[in-house]
Amino acid sequence: MRSKCLSIGLALLLFGCKGEVNDDWQKSAIPPIRPDAAVKLRVVHAINPRLARFSPDHLKIILASAQLTVWKNFGVYIEFTDVPEMRIDQLFALIPPAVMQERLSSIYDFKSGKGDRQKLVEGIDATLTERGTKLEDALSFAAPYLPANAHPEDLMALSGLLADVMLERLQQWRRLNAADGAPVLDASPYNEWVYWDTLGYGNLPYDLVITNQPIASAEYYGADLHSAIRGGLTVGTTSFSRDSKYGSYIVMSTFPFQDDSALTKLLRGGEQYSEEDAAELAGAYLAHEIGHLLFQLGHPFGQKSCVMNPVSMLRFREWARQLDGAECRIGSRPEMTAGAIPPTYNAAWMKMLQPR
Ligand SMILES: [Zn+2]
Image (cartoon, rainbow, N blue to C red):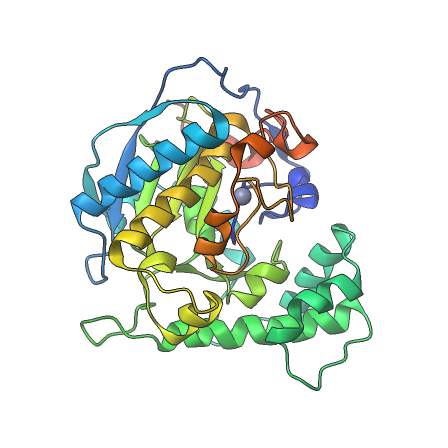
Protein backbone atom coordinates (compact mmCIF):
# COMPACT_ATOMS: atom_id res chain seq x y z
CA MET A 1 0.00 0.00 0.00
CA ARG A 2 0.38 3.35 -0.55
CA SER A 3 -0.07 -0.09 -0.41
CA LYS A 4 2.93 0.29 -2.30
CA CYS A 5 4.54 -2.25 -4.11
CA LEU A 6 7.54 -2.63 -6.24
CA SER A 7 9.57 0.41 -6.95
CA ILE A 8 9.34 1.07 -10.53
CA GLY A 9 9.79 2.73 -13.85
CA LEU A 10 8.16 0.86 -16.67
CA ALA A 11 6.21 -1.29 -14.28
CA LEU A 12 4.96 1.89 -12.67
CA LEU A 13 2.61 2.27 -15.56
CA LEU A 14 1.17 -1.15 -15.01
CA PHE A 15 1.09 -1.77 -11.34
CA GLY A 16 0.55 1.36 -9.44
CA CYS A 17 3.78 1.94 -7.68
CA LYS A 18 5.71 5.10 -7.23
CA GLY A 19 8.85 5.88 -9.10
CA GLU A 20 10.33 8.40 -11.41
CA VAL A 21 9.66 8.04 -15.07
CA ASN A 22 12.82 7.84 -17.09
CA ASP A 23 14.57 5.52 -19.48
CA ASP A 24 17.10 3.91 -17.18
CA TRP A 25 14.78 1.37 -15.57
CA GLN A 26 15.69 -2.25 -16.02
CA LYS A 27 14.19 -5.49 -14.85
CA SER A 28 16.18 -7.61 -12.42
CA ALA A 29 17.18 -11.04 -13.74
CA ILE A 30 16.48 -12.63 -10.35
CA PRO A 31 13.63 -15.15 -10.76
CA PRO A 32 10.83 -15.67 -8.23
CA ILE A 33 11.53 -18.41 -5.70
CA ARG A 34 10.64 -22.02 -6.39
CA PRO A 35 7.72 -23.34 -4.31
CA ASP A 36 10.02 -25.77 -2.46
CA ALA A 37 12.69 -23.20 -1.64
CA ALA A 38 13.83 -22.76 1.96
CA VAL A 39 13.21 -19.16 2.93
CA LYS A 40 14.62 -17.38 5.96
CA LEU A 41 14.13 -13.63 5.80
CA ARG A 42 16.65 -11.35 7.48
CA VAL A 43 14.69 -8.96 9.71
CA VAL A 44 15.48 -5.73 11.55
CA HIS A 45 13.31 -3.45 13.68
CA ALA A 46 14.23 0.10 12.65
CA ILE A 47 12.95 2.45 15.27
CA ASN A 48 12.32 6.12 15.72
CA PRO A 49 12.96 6.24 19.49
CA ARG A 50 10.52 9.15 19.86
CA LEU A 51 7.51 7.13 18.74
CA ALA A 52 5.36 4.30 20.07
CA ARG A 53 6.44 0.86 18.94
CA PHE A 54 5.51 -2.78 19.27
CA SER A 55 7.12 -4.81 22.07
CA PRO A 56 9.44 -7.73 21.19
CA ASP A 57 6.57 -10.11 21.99
CA HIS A 58 4.24 -8.27 19.63
CA LEU A 59 6.91 -8.34 16.93
CA LYS A 60 6.89 -12.12 17.31
CA ILE A 61 3.10 -12.07 16.84
CA ILE A 62 3.56 -10.05 13.63
CA LEU A 63 6.02 -12.57 12.23
CA ALA A 64 3.94 -15.58 13.33
CA SER A 65 0.89 -14.06 11.69
CA ALA A 66 2.85 -13.37 8.49
CA GLN A 67 4.20 -16.93 8.50
CA LEU A 68 0.71 -18.39 8.85
CA THR A 69 -0.81 -16.07 6.23
CA VAL A 70 1.97 -16.90 3.76
CA TRP A 71 1.41 -20.60 4.40
CA LYS A 72 -2.36 -20.37 3.93
CA ASN A 73 -2.23 -18.20 0.84
CA PHE A 74 0.95 -19.24 -0.95
CA GLY A 75 1.47 -22.75 0.45
CA VAL A 76 5.04 -21.98 1.43
CA TYR A 77 6.62 -22.23 4.87
CA ILE A 78 8.92 -19.32 5.58
CA GLU A 79 11.11 -18.45 8.54
CA PHE A 80 12.59 -15.27 9.92
CA THR A 81 15.85 -14.48 11.68
CA ASP A 82 15.88 -12.94 15.13
CA VAL A 83 14.94 -9.27 15.06
CA PRO A 84 17.75 -6.91 16.09
CA GLU A 85 16.83 -3.31 16.78
CA MET A 86 18.50 -0.27 15.26
CA ARG A 87 17.68 3.41 14.92
CA ILE A 88 16.45 4.74 11.61
CA ASP A 89 19.31 7.23 11.43
CA GLN A 90 21.76 4.29 11.54
CA LEU A 91 19.81 2.58 8.79
CA PHE A 92 19.59 5.69 6.61
CA ALA A 93 23.37 6.04 6.86
CA LEU A 94 23.41 3.17 4.33
CA ILE A 95 21.65 5.27 1.67
CA PRO A 96 24.13 6.23 -1.07
CA PRO A 97 24.25 10.06 -1.02
CA ALA A 98 24.72 10.37 -4.79
CA VAL A 99 21.57 8.39 -5.56
CA MET A 100 19.60 10.23 -2.90
CA GLN A 101 20.71 13.55 -4.36
CA GLU A 102 19.38 12.43 -7.72
CA ARG A 103 15.97 11.66 -6.25
CA LEU A 104 15.39 14.65 -3.98
CA SER A 105 13.64 16.58 -6.74
CA SER A 106 10.83 14.02 -6.89
CA ILE A 107 9.76 14.83 -3.30
CA TYR A 108 6.91 17.29 -2.80
CA ASP A 109 8.20 19.21 0.22
CA PHE A 110 5.05 19.63 2.30
CA LYS A 111 6.92 20.68 5.42
CA SER A 112 8.49 23.85 4.05
CA GLY A 113 5.47 24.97 2.06
CA LYS A 114 7.68 25.05 -1.05
CA GLY A 115 5.96 22.16 -2.85
CA ASP A 116 4.62 22.79 -6.34
CA ARG A 117 0.90 21.97 -6.14
CA GLN A 118 0.32 22.20 -9.89
CA LYS A 119 3.11 19.71 -10.54
CA LEU A 120 1.57 17.35 -7.99
CA VAL A 121 -1.85 17.69 -9.70
CA GLU A 122 -0.26 16.90 -13.06
CA GLY A 123 1.51 13.90 -11.52
CA ILE A 124 -1.76 12.49 -10.17
CA ASP A 125 -3.46 13.14 -13.52
CA ALA A 126 -0.63 11.35 -15.33
CA THR A 127 -0.96 8.32 -13.04
CA LEU A 128 -4.73 8.13 -13.44
CA THR A 129 -4.44 8.53 -17.20
CA GLU A 130 -1.65 5.97 -17.59
CA ARG A 131 -3.72 3.42 -15.71
CA GLY A 132 -6.76 3.99 -17.89
CA THR A 133 -8.82 5.22 -14.94
CA LYS A 134 -12.44 6.02 -15.80
CA LEU A 135 -13.68 9.24 -14.22
CA GLU A 136 -16.93 7.60 -13.18
CA ASP A 137 -15.22 4.69 -11.40
CA ALA A 138 -12.71 6.95 -9.66
CA LEU A 139 -15.47 9.27 -8.54
CA SER A 140 -17.67 6.53 -7.13
CA PHE A 141 -14.72 5.41 -5.04
CA ALA A 142 -13.43 8.83 -4.04
CA ALA A 143 -16.71 10.75 -3.60
CA PRO A 144 -17.04 10.14 0.17
CA TYR A 145 -13.65 11.78 0.66
CA LEU A 146 -14.20 14.79 -1.61
CA PRO A 147 -16.15 18.00 -0.91
CA ALA A 148 -19.90 17.34 -1.23
CA ASN A 149 -20.32 19.97 -3.94
CA ALA A 150 -17.44 18.65 -6.06
CA HIS A 151 -18.37 17.65 -9.60
CA PRO A 152 -15.09 17.30 -11.52
CA GLU A 153 -15.65 17.06 -15.25
CA ASP A 154 -12.41 15.35 -16.18
CA LEU A 155 -9.46 13.51 -14.65
CA MET A 156 -7.41 16.70 -14.35
CA ALA A 157 -10.15 18.36 -12.31
CA LEU A 158 -10.44 15.23 -10.17
CA SER A 159 -6.65 15.25 -9.73
CA GLY A 160 -6.88 18.80 -8.38
CA LEU A 161 -9.43 17.70 -5.79
CA LEU A 162 -7.34 14.67 -4.88
CA ALA A 163 -4.22 16.79 -4.47
CA ASP A 164 -6.15 19.04 -2.08
CA VAL A 165 -7.31 16.03 -0.05
CA MET A 166 -3.79 14.61 -0.03
CA LEU A 167 -2.15 17.85 1.10
CA GLU A 168 -4.80 18.55 3.72
CA ARG A 169 -4.36 15.06 5.16
CA LEU A 170 -0.59 15.34 5.07
CA GLN A 171 -1.04 18.46 7.19
CA GLN A 172 -3.28 16.44 9.52
CA TRP A 173 -0.51 13.86 9.89
CA ARG A 174 1.82 16.75 10.53
CA ARG A 175 -0.38 18.15 13.30
CA LEU A 176 -0.28 14.82 15.11
CA ASN A 177 1.85 14.88 18.25
CA ALA A 178 3.82 12.01 19.76
CA ALA A 179 3.83 11.18 23.47
CA ASP A 180 6.76 13.58 23.96
CA GLY A 181 4.58 16.47 22.80
CA ALA A 182 6.56 17.08 19.60
CA PRO A 183 5.09 16.36 16.14
CA VAL A 184 5.19 12.76 14.95
CA LEU A 185 6.44 14.09 11.61
CA ASP A 186 9.36 16.27 12.65
CA ALA A 187 12.16 17.81 10.59
CA SER A 188 13.78 14.42 9.96
CA PRO A 189 13.29 12.82 6.53
CA TYR A 190 12.20 9.49 8.03
CA ASN A 191 8.62 9.96 6.82
CA GLU A 192 9.70 10.39 3.17
CA TRP A 193 8.90 7.37 1.04
CA VAL A 194 11.68 8.17 -1.45
CA TYR A 195 14.38 7.62 1.20
CA TRP A 196 13.02 4.16 2.01
CA ASP A 197 12.77 3.42 -1.71
CA THR A 198 16.45 4.36 -2.12
CA LEU A 199 17.74 2.38 0.86
CA GLY A 200 18.23 -0.82 -1.17
CA TYR A 201 20.80 0.90 -3.39
CA GLY A 202 23.06 0.83 -0.32
CA ASN A 203 24.50 -2.28 1.27
CA LEU A 204 21.35 -3.24 3.10
CA PRO A 205 21.79 -6.54 4.97
CA TYR A 206 18.07 -7.15 5.54
CA ASP A 207 15.14 -8.50 3.52
CA LEU A 208 12.55 -7.07 5.87
CA VAL A 209 12.63 -3.78 7.74
CA ILE A 210 9.84 -3.32 10.28
CA THR A 211 9.58 0.27 11.45
CA ASN A 212 7.42 2.21 13.88
CA GLN A 213 7.89 5.29 11.69
CA PRO A 214 4.87 6.63 9.81
CA ILE A 215 5.83 6.91 6.16
CA ALA A 216 3.66 9.77 4.93
CA SER A 217 4.77 11.87 2.00
CA ALA A 218 3.94 13.16 -1.45
CA GLU A 219 5.94 12.70 -4.63
CA TYR A 220 5.50 14.27 -8.02
CA TYR A 221 5.40 10.89 -9.74
CA GLY A 222 3.17 7.92 -9.20
CA ALA A 223 0.71 9.23 -6.60
CA ASP A 224 -2.66 7.62 -7.18
CA LEU A 225 -6.16 7.91 -5.88
CA HIS A 226 -5.65 5.62 -2.90
CA SER A 227 -2.45 7.21 -1.68
CA ALA A 228 -3.96 10.68 -2.11
CA ILE A 229 -6.96 9.84 0.06
CA ARG A 230 -4.72 8.28 2.70
CA GLY A 231 -2.75 11.51 2.88
CA GLY A 232 0.27 9.86 1.30
CA LEU A 233 0.49 7.21 4.03
CA THR A 234 2.38 4.02 3.15
CA VAL A 235 1.82 0.72 4.92
CA GLY A 236 4.38 -1.42 3.14
CA THR A 237 6.61 -1.18 0.13
CA THR A 238 8.68 -3.78 -1.67
CA SER A 239 11.59 -1.99 -3.31
CA PHE A 240 14.75 -2.90 -5.17
CA SER A 241 17.65 -4.09 -3.05
CA ARG A 242 20.96 -4.92 -4.67
CA ASP A 243 22.11 -7.09 -1.76
CA SER A 244 18.99 -9.22 -1.42
CA LYS A 245 18.88 -12.64 -3.00
CA TYR A 246 15.28 -11.88 -3.89
CA GLY A 247 16.21 -8.66 -5.71
CA SER A 248 14.18 -6.46 -3.38
CA TYR A 249 13.44 -5.76 0.26
CA ILE A 250 10.32 -4.93 2.27
CA VAL A 251 9.73 -1.98 4.53
CA MET A 252 6.65 -2.36 6.68
CA SER A 253 5.38 0.48 8.83
CA THR A 254 3.51 -0.52 11.97
CA PHE A 255 2.13 3.01 12.46
CA PRO A 256 -1.10 2.43 10.46
CA PHE A 257 -1.91 -0.49 12.76
CA GLN A 258 -0.95 1.04 16.11
CA ASP A 259 -2.00 4.65 15.67
CA ASP A 260 -5.33 5.74 17.12
CA SER A 261 -5.58 9.30 15.81
CA ALA A 262 -8.84 10.62 14.36
CA LEU A 263 -7.54 10.42 10.79
CA THR A 264 -6.39 6.82 11.19
CA LYS A 265 -9.76 5.91 12.70
CA LEU A 266 -11.53 7.58 9.79
CA LEU A 267 -9.45 5.62 7.27
CA ARG A 268 -10.10 2.46 9.27
CA GLY A 269 -13.84 2.93 8.76
CA GLY A 270 -14.69 2.31 12.40
CA GLU A 271 -12.55 -0.78 12.93
CA GLN A 272 -10.90 -0.88 16.35
CA TYR A 273 -7.78 -2.86 17.11
CA SER A 274 -6.31 -4.02 20.39
CA GLU A 275 -2.50 -4.13 20.46
CA GLU A 276 -2.71 -7.86 19.75
CA ASP A 277 -5.17 -7.36 16.85
CA ALA A 278 -2.89 -4.69 15.45
CA ALA A 279 0.12 -7.03 15.51
CA GLU A 280 -1.85 -9.87 13.98
CA LEU A 281 -3.23 -7.70 11.18
CA ALA A 282 0.18 -6.15 10.52
CA GLY A 283 1.53 -9.68 10.08
CA ALA A 284 -1.29 -10.64 7.74
CA TYR A 285 -0.64 -7.57 5.60
CA LEU A 286 3.07 -8.30 5.68
CA ALA A 287 2.22 -11.47 3.74
CA HIS A 288 1.04 -9.18 0.89
CA GLU A 289 4.50 -7.62 0.67
CA ILE A 290 6.11 -11.07 0.98
CA GLY A 291 4.07 -12.05 -2.10
CA HIS A 292 5.80 -9.22 -3.97
CA LEU A 293 9.22 -10.12 -2.53
CA LEU A 294 9.33 -13.89 -3.04
CA PHE A 295 6.97 -14.50 -5.96
CA GLN A 296 7.02 -11.09 -7.68
CA LEU A 297 3.21 -11.06 -7.73
CA GLY A 298 1.11 -8.12 -8.87
CA HIS A 299 -2.19 -6.64 -7.66
CA PRO A 300 -5.43 -8.42 -8.57
CA PHE A 301 -7.45 -5.29 -7.74
CA GLY A 302 -10.90 -5.98 -6.30
CA GLN A 303 -10.33 -9.76 -6.00
CA LYS A 304 -11.14 -9.87 -2.33
CA SER A 305 -10.07 -13.45 -1.69
CA CYS A 306 -6.52 -12.56 -2.73
CA VAL A 307 -3.87 -11.50 -0.24
CA MET A 308 -2.36 -9.51 -3.14
CA ASN A 309 -5.49 -7.34 -3.43
CA PRO A 310 -4.45 -4.08 -1.73
CA VAL A 311 -6.34 -3.09 1.42
CA SER A 312 -9.03 -0.46 1.01
CA MET A 313 -7.91 2.60 2.97
CA LEU A 314 -6.81 1.18 6.35
CA ARG A 315 -9.61 -1.38 6.80
CA PHE A 316 -7.32 -4.26 7.58
CA ARG A 317 -9.86 -6.40 9.40
CA GLU A 318 -12.28 -6.25 6.48
CA TRP A 319 -9.38 -7.08 4.14
CA ALA A 320 -8.16 -10.02 6.27
CA ARG A 321 -11.63 -11.52 6.76
CA GLN A 322 -12.19 -11.92 3.05
CA LEU A 323 -8.95 -13.77 2.31
CA ASP A 324 -9.30 -17.27 0.92
CA GLY A 325 -6.12 -18.83 -0.35
CA ALA A 326 -7.99 -21.70 -2.01
CA GLU A 327 -9.86 -19.19 -4.17
CA CYS A 328 -6.75 -17.30 -5.20
CA ARG A 329 -3.87 -19.66 -5.68
CA ILE A 330 -0.60 -18.66 -7.25
CA GLY A 331 -1.08 -18.99 -10.99
CA SER A 332 -4.86 -18.53 -10.85
CA ARG A 333 -4.80 -15.02 -12.38
CA PRO A 334 -2.30 -13.04 -14.44
CA GLU A 335 -1.41 -10.82 -11.46
CA MET A 336 -1.05 -13.94 -9.30
CA THR A 337 1.47 -15.53 -11.64
CA ALA A 338 4.98 -15.83 -10.18
CA GLY A 339 7.26 -13.34 -11.90
CA ALA A 340 4.36 -11.00 -12.87
CA ILE A 341 6.36 -8.01 -11.63
CA PRO A 342 10.11 -8.60 -11.47
CA PRO A 343 12.06 -6.14 -9.33
CA THR A 344 13.23 -3.15 -11.33
CA TYR A 345 16.14 -0.87 -10.74
CA ASN A 346 17.58 2.28 -12.21
CA ALA A 347 20.77 1.49 -14.10
CA ALA A 348 21.98 5.10 -13.99
CA TRP A 349 21.74 5.12 -10.22
CA MET A 350 23.56 1.79 -9.98
CA LYS A 351 26.45 3.33 -11.93
CA MET A 352 26.80 5.98 -9.23
CA LEU A 353 27.65 3.37 -6.61
CA GLN A 354 31.11 2.36 -5.53
CA PRO A 355 32.04 -1.11 -6.74
CA ARG A 356 32.06 -3.61 -3.91
ZN1 LIG B 1 1.27 -4.37 -3.11
